[in-house]
Length: 98
Image (tube, rainbow, N blue to C red; front, side, top):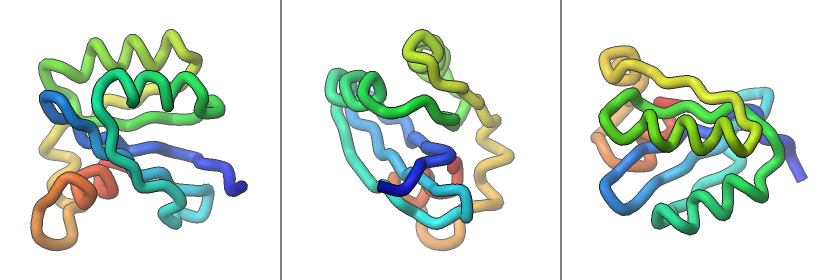
């Protein structure tokens, strides 16, 4: 199995889209979770960097990820927007965050 270097998470109210990149920047993981399933998945994932857009709900999730041993990066939305390559959707946003 390929090692995931960074996981980008696009946050929603009740659903979360993840994209995982390896050390070369290639996509190795693409998943969609509810909040409980996301926490369960992250608790079983080897320690890695998790990136997400900074917003009202991101701080709770960031603290939860840190308690699981992950390194968390909160990115301002204006820094993510230039990396969105095509039409906006949840997976494209997660990819831009990663």
